[in-house]
Image (cartoon, rainbow, N blue to C red):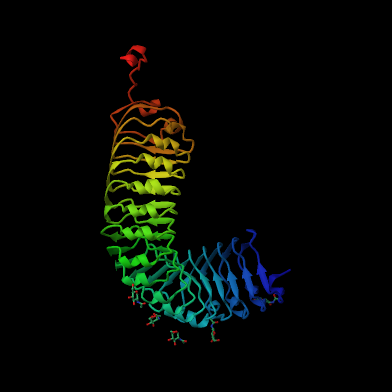
Length: 431
Ligand SMILES: *[C@@H]1O[C@H](CO)[C@@H](O)[C@H](O)[C@H]1NC(C)=O
Ligand SMILES: *[C@@H]1O[C@H](CO)[C@@H](O)[C@H](O)[C@H]1NC(C)=O
Ligand SMILES: *[C@@H]1O[C@H](CO)[C@@H](O)[C@H](O)[C@H]1NC(C)=O
Ligand SMILES: *[C@@H]1O[C@H](CO)[C@@H](O)[C@H](O)[C@H]1NC(C)=O
Ligand SMILES: *[C@@H]1O[C@H](CO)[C@@H](O)[C@H](O)[C@H]1NC(C)=O
């Protein structure tokens, strides 16, 4: 049966990954259609102009297809629409300036991962039912409208990977008391983090703005956002210390401050973040030793990244208690002493990078037995003695040991000197 002849259809939903070709213009004949969803297929071509005939359409979903061309302006005229999902296509065009007036029933607007361009229309503030606004991964430019605070139901605002900037004005968003996530990674925001960040909703659980040029210190008011479980402010220009109050973020699971210019010590209050799964403080100017609280309390961590700082002292033996640890990046610091033998307890360890430190002595016994260890870099230290030939040490591409002048043995491809024969004589034991 032809699609265009099913004129009484109310709901059309196909997500079997089987549809190919284009959306037929005869779609416009289904004048009673309320719900159209063809997500996860292989549709290509454009959205037909005739979509504008569907005066009852409430939801239009075409996510994850290969649709391209400009979205016909007739679609932006359908005042009945409450949900649009264009995510992951190659759709383009500028959003009409009056979009928030014509689509005044819009609740969900997902257009991320397309090729939309131009400014974000200020009229979106008139679509007062908006709950989710996802404009990420497009080519939007200019400033973010300063009136989004009228959207009192807004829960998620996603603006990442565009060319938005440069001022960061969060004042109005403080009115959005239901806001749960605010994401504006990889744009061109600059200047200091305004104190109005502390007036965002305490409901906020995800705040991500890595990859901008935001500078200055981390403001005290950030501590108001007590329910954060994910905070990403990596790849910016922050200076000063990591505030002690970070220890108050009891729900924190992912904390990324990497790639800034932070200095001072890692606060020992970090050890209060017992839900933490990923901690990334790498590529800053942090100094001092690893606080014992971190390795003592953070049992859930699976990725600990503190590489390329000025950290020193010994790697705590208690690191062997972080049983979920999968990746440990300590390279490019001034750690001294030995690689703790407790590392051999980390059964899930996949990556261990300790290169460019001042580590001494032997490789701890048992590392070669870690079944998941796929990558080991101990290069440029003063580690000595025999190198195992099994486990991770068996694979020349997985192991980097150069720059340790007293290593011996190992697989032939590493071209290390032979180890001197050890004679286990009773005499020498007794003496
Ligand atoms: C449906 O729409 C197409 C093009 O929009 C039109 O040519 C056709 O006559 C319409 N009717 C049916 C039953 O397909
Ligand atoms: C949108 O609706 C208005 C008013 O109903 C109408 O004048 C205009 O032609 C429509 N535009 C499109 C592209 O359908
Ligand atoms: C859009 O919303 C703003 C702020 O609430 C309001 O001042 C303006 O009158 C609205 N525009 C229209 C056309 O309703
Ligand atoms: C937000 O709230 C402030 C004061 O609480 C108010 O002055 C402002 O008009 C509100 N609306 C916007 C969009 O900022
Ligand atoms: C923002 O929060 C500060 C306290 O952190 C408060 O003094 C100020 O009145 C708040 N501003 C608004 C507009 O709510």
